[in-house]
Length: 131
Image (cartoon, rainbow, N blue to C red):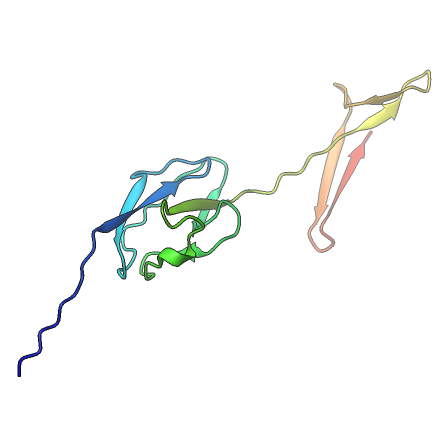
């Protein structure tokens, strides 16, 4: 008796790559159902460092090269998409204010004001001094 195995091979599935505010090329990858990701590009974003490809713009499931393709992890399996997520740098905003001679509140710093700042990393605070 001879056993013959038949394996159904489907076409590649196109997965859209959304750079989520950055730039990426190519904008799609083709993955075989039951295959592995092996050609995910690294996008660029001037405002942050790339953290990975995910199934949602925020949160979701992370997907990396070498991962098994699983259509069930996508919110919309008919049009699967991966979204770049980035680590954005922390920004500190400093605002100043004072009362003018008439007692009216004013905001902002004026030319000639001297500003110094000290960041105490152990207390995670920023002290700003205006003189």
